[in-house]
Structure formats: structure tokens, C-alpha cells
Length: 107
Length: 120
Image (cartoon, rainbow over all chains, first blue to last red; front, top):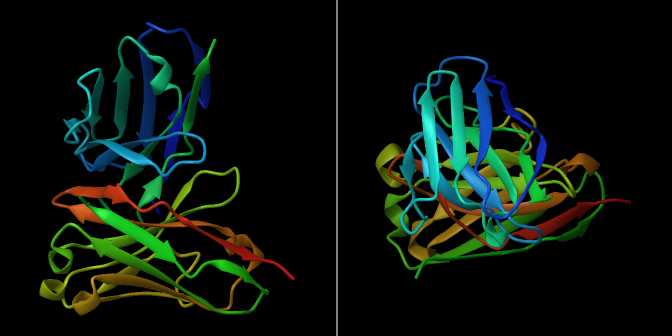
């Protein structure tokens, strides 16, 4: 199975900060990579698929980049509603695997 | 509006069985691949399994941790997704979410989740 890692596992940031989360796959997954946001007690929400494509309705403050094995999620001008846990997921090969998550909290 | 509503969760003893349902509305159910994703308490997300559409013969895929014990199925006439779980283990305790695939986006929409607790 493909292994997915994320770094950092957590980070503290302030409102207005720019945040970058890294996701790495253990083998080439092309651009079959999605990002999800989850707030406490809520279902995850899809943010980005195909590594760089924003889901409908997701603000352009979120962006994704990368291909192959290395990917990033960037959030610019962090707002209170952006404090959450973020997961990447590869869907190139079965079984689909999620990264362990990155918790973004308020500094 | 897309709606996914899971039901059927609860407390079950180790070795027991449980069947989860997901009632879907607001989209063309029969065209879509459907997945189950779970989340153990305080843990990350784990993909459980998928059922493809009729066009792909309703074929299925599973995570290794549930293969042979869980079965994903669907009833397009009732726009419903199912997860039959058997030989349940304590480590299957989790919130189970049903999700929709749209195009190449694997989990566009999520249900609210249903809690399954496996305990004696």
C-alpha cells in the first residue's frame, strides 16, 4: 500500500498568517491527491482534488500544488474559520489512503 | 441540495454484525461511485470501501483491514448505500461516513456520520 505522510502534524498560527502543509506519498501518484478540512465534531469537507483543483464554493485563499510524490496545501490570510485539521488523501491506487492530518490552531 | 443521511449505528458486541445505511438525495445516485470512510474516536480518517455504479457492474474495493468482513452494496431504486459489517472487532469502533464521488473528486459530499461502538 501507498504510505502518506503530512508535515507538520500540528502548527500554531495567527489570524492573517500564510500557512503551508506538506503531504508526501511513498510512490508516484501523479496528481491523484485530495485535501480535506475537518472541524471538531463535524464531517470533513472536500477542499481540493486532482492536487490543484478547488471544489466549487471553496474560497481562492486555499491552493494546492504538486505532483508525483510531493504536494502542498497553502492557506493565505488565515481566518478564525480556517482553524481545523487538514487531511490529504491519495486516490490513484486502492486502497485509498489518508494522511495522518495536520491540526492548525490559534497561536 | 445533496443530502446523505446515515443510519443503523449503535452498540454491538465483538464478533457481532451490523448493517449501516445511507439514504441519498439531491443528485443522480445511480451514476455515482459511493464510498464509506470511518474515523475512530480522536483519530484520523480511514477509507473503508467503495461500490462502483451499474455501468461498472457494481464492483467493489475494500481496505485490507475490513476485506472479507465488510460488504459495500447499493440499491439504486432506493438511492441507498449500505455497509454490512460482520465479525466486528473493537478496533472497528468509529464514526462511519458515506461519501459521493463526482468525476475525479473522490469524496465531494459527506454525510453527518453514524457512530458504531464495538464493545462487550
